[in-house]
Image 1 (cartoon, rainbow, N blue to C red):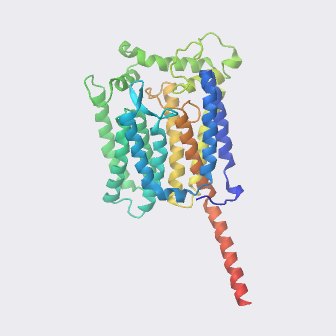
Image 2 (tube, one colour):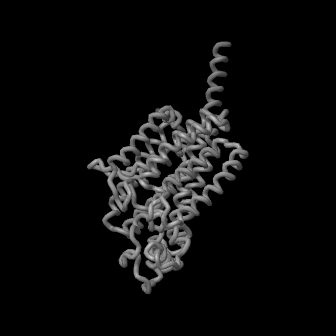
Length: 391
């Protein structure tokens, strides 16, 4: 379960990036809502501890429990369905009295682990109809439980994540091309339906968000687009170095004025833009890119396909959610409520991401270079014993 590793194979660079962005997150959450600063700090501490523990646990051993993890994931999502507590019109949380958490965030990590093992076991027959159909069914079950919460943003995120995982596993380009020919027309048909006022595919508030993005000048959707307009104003007010240094008081603060709701979660990037300006926002984007890059870099050194999928999967979550959140905050995408990794308030998301990073670090510890070194040691031992027998 826990193996002995060489310290020089530990990716301290990734740990530094994670600590740096988490420190910024604590400051931003504290700026947005001072009473949440201590909770965010507690989440970072718990996350780092779990990350360090998981980084020393052999991920290959953990993958032996893939079906137990899959079953636990389904039970968690069913608990949300039948016993979940509601907020903002959606039941996405489970309240155990002493803790309230969002199972969907942990579900993403479990899905990565499950399919990492599944695709490695089916590496030779991945492109057969039987394996593809089986993987689709195994995905659809948790995906539907996420969709009915309702949680469209995580439904889309998990779907994109699965596509990345199966591509990394070695999906044939012929199948990818065929799937694209089917998926693109279906997406067009879906969008043409959801813009209709009497459609039943998505919730009314979800449709209003899409319509406000497509028709921002329409007064009917003014309330839905106002949040994003205020977010852009707040970011612009930070100018180059941020309002903390440029003294710009011509625009009401996003925090003091309270004209962007959920600024500690969905619109944390607006707080960053106002507080630290263009330079601060660029630094945040670079940190998120470097974290994703380190995950991909370690995937190239993984000892097996499962390790490669784990690294790319966790890195993809950071990249996808960062892209969506920043696009929403800057008005380039409809409002989705997606948190910004390691920066937005939300302990379940924060701790789950740290757990994923712990697994990535363990993959790095068992890199191909590490295994080659072990093989050389074994060869030296064998040579020594053969020499002793000869003497």
